[in-house]
Length: 193
Image (cartoon, rainbow, N blue to C red; front, side, top):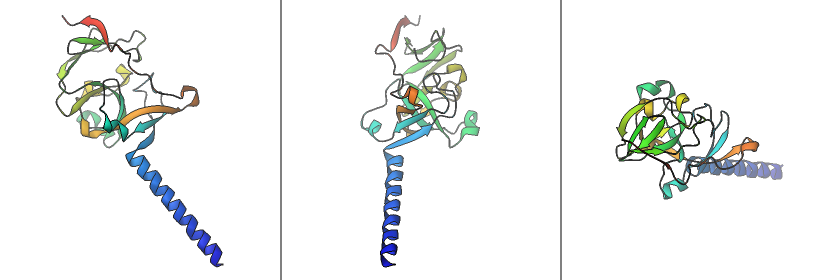
């Protein structure tokens, strides 16, 4: 009887430690998320699983083109999403001016090369007046531009709301691997006039 009780206690301790380590890893190192909306299509489809780097991205810096997970900011346009985590692509960095016109996103007067957007020609169908990204903020957009509630609707994202950078898609298996990255030459040979 004593052996059974001792064995039972050992198993409870092992399970508790495993659970604790799992929670620490999920909170501070990596997390797996299920994407519930098509705002990042075609790059990330509804119900895709993505692994979020919650630790190592802090050792470098986020760059234009990174796909990030963040808590929905407190904005009227996001009332139904308060407290929810969203997934978007980082487009504008602090100090940059972002504008949407002529089907392209423009950063400081240069058109972005964005082959990952849902429109087959890579063109955005709406216009947006120039916005300068303040210090401590990012400008984020979904790859499904016309189907994404993002910075063009509700403004710039506070950097302190970012949880991490999407690293890899482990599921579904047929799309296993790193996500579409921006081209090496992030700008098109176009300039605002």
